[in-house]
Length: 176
Image (cartoon, rainbow, N blue to C red; front, side, top):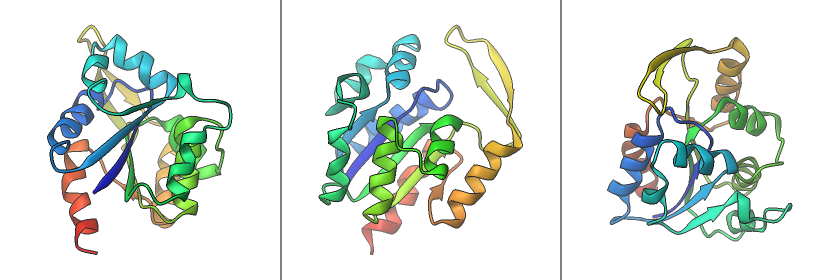
């Protein structure tokens, strides 16, 4: 399977997302689409070197029109996964704002009927997460962020709570 995997600027679920990427790389062709914030956060959490082992499209190296997003229109990917997906990225996708690498790729994927899987960082009312220094803290998710997820789900976007669910979600595309 040809997988496009987007990483937005969240530390929450980043390590777990990378673990799944590493697990899937021998069975699937994977290209990572890395937002500017995703690149910055991966470096903060000291995980960037693990991402460099994959074909990598960095927002920081793209032009303003994000030419790499055209790959979705050209049927070069079977699925687009964004994990972790920040509430900002989720909101842009829901509202059709395609002004960043990941929101533009999601827009083109949806317009080209490429399945979109999101693993949002803010998927329930209270989220416990870890800072780069290891400190545990809670995030209290806004109602509007949860509504964006419900709306995208109604539109056919697959919403998962954890990156560990991705492998099982991909199985449904292998048999179609």
